[in-house]
Length: 297
Image (cartoon, rainbow, N blue to C red):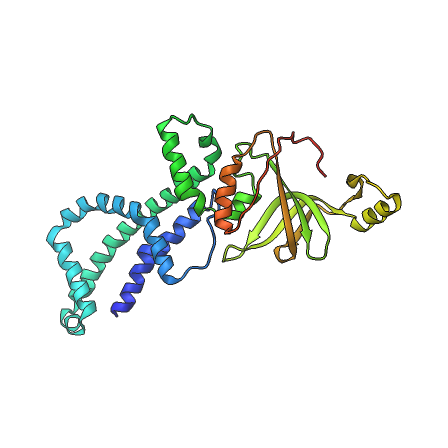
């Protein structure tokens, strides 16, 4: 019985709040996704619920003080009866009455607790999504320094690395296009604008969806190059792929080159540092400033 009660309490106070936090945070930006052990889930739950539970306890204490000794007696009877079958048998209807009162108080506390968790998730998600705007603030502003420390130490490492890499997250102008050149395992080179991507429960990339896609006619290019015995214009060998979108499976990708087509430069040093750490391999990022109207495909 004690083990069952402990499991229920862990679910109510740690696992459900942790899932609620991830859901609310993910409304703005997706958190890093990876399969956790039960102990890792509990630890993550503790880290994301510390502040809300402190605030909830602080707000609920005055009401608990009003109920006073009667409430403490109810809790004592409930836990004693759960621990001992003899006490449960002797308590009779008093146990159920005490359980009802204690449950009502805990439901009120949990509602307040979950509300604060949702506010925390939404607030931190909004802050994370607003990184480019805060990065443009004057360096000597105290609020900007605090935010940048929070972003670099907590928020950015928590966001999915593929979201950072395959979306205009680091750009204040969200119209910035993320253009990709992808070499597939069958030797075909594709390019287009990244419109969506997906990852599995371990955070590994599953696939990329491109719009305005084209395929490089490598065979024709090599043949013409051989005939002319010189340089040929590579641009004319790109063939537009019919359809609005092209889906490429991640396990078919041998090489991925990205360019960010926007009016403002991105913080490439920070992008390299954050994404390299999360992908656990070195990357190199270069950003060219080009007008969105420039033809790239």
